[in-house]
Length: 95
Image 1 (cartoon, one colour):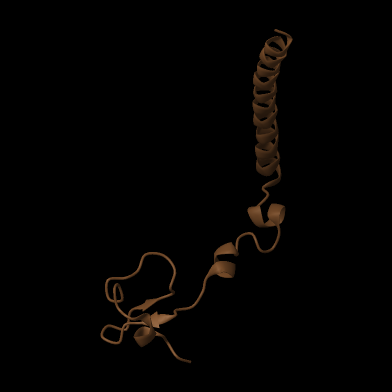
Image 2 (cartoon, rainbow, N blue to C red):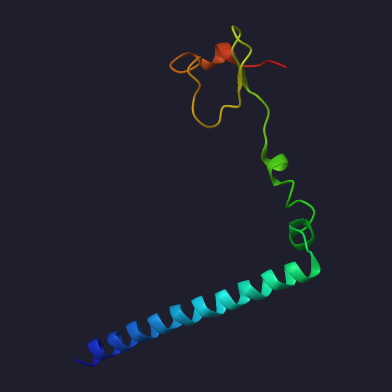
């Protein structure tokens, strides 16, 4: 009986904690948005030099080339039709 009562109290406290966290997060987000607007801050100023260049940091070069069309593929993502089911070694770009 004591255990069930404690578990019920814990469930109530968990709900209250989630609600309080949600409210405080919304307030913090509103405050941040207001500061960004008031001071015309950019993402780069807030998060640093590399923030807006993230896509450049993670781009990789082509690893495979289709000799017929010249199309390239990095080896990541969906396999192109021109290489699907074939030996990839034949399409490797050798530098």
